[in-house]
Length: 300
Image (cartoon, rainbow, N blue to C red):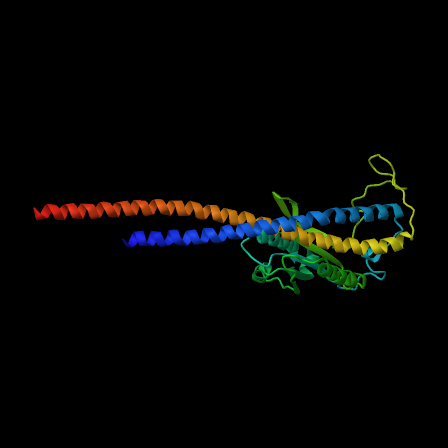
């Protein structure tokens, strides 16, 4: 009797867990749909803006300089640190999401002397314990919530750009989970500052493309320096905001998958416990019947 009561309690507990994980899966699915819309809506603007900056920088020639590309005019101050911004989640139950980002972050910190000696900044609460355990000092902890606003992210990007142009920072790198598709996300180390807009442009002098096709020629009005002076800060803000959007949608995907797996596992465990309960109950009934028959036989 005690065994059947124990199994029945476990069946009830597993059923409660299954209802909770199913609810969390549905919530994560709804959040995923909203965050996916935000991430995909901002990506064309971010990619288009950065492609425009690369083309303009390549067409303007090698004489073009800007503090966000080359650093401040007098160079970075002696001992100016690098900043490594790690984007994690505020809540758990999202599978390997935080572990993947933090493993890449630790690999980057250990392999890069500048990152190891620089400032480590963190977004999200779940990375704090991991970094503290690995004795990595966190200089600042930012909170943006499930729906990071462009204004809040722009403020952080502007702070980085101001410090970089004053020579107080030698570089800024962002480690986050990049959203590639609903079935694939990969942790990435993105160099935010200094910008390298000409790195991905393989063009010949005069604006001719390297692989054939029509040449793109620009007439600058206002001058290229003034035009890029407006476009480059906008590109930095857009890139950082896109990184936050990718991180949020990747987190929601990971939580949705993790909760579905937990729900399926709870369902399987419930079926197993139900079979065990039925067998135990059958054995108990058989024992009781045997006792009744034996008692009736003894009275004869």
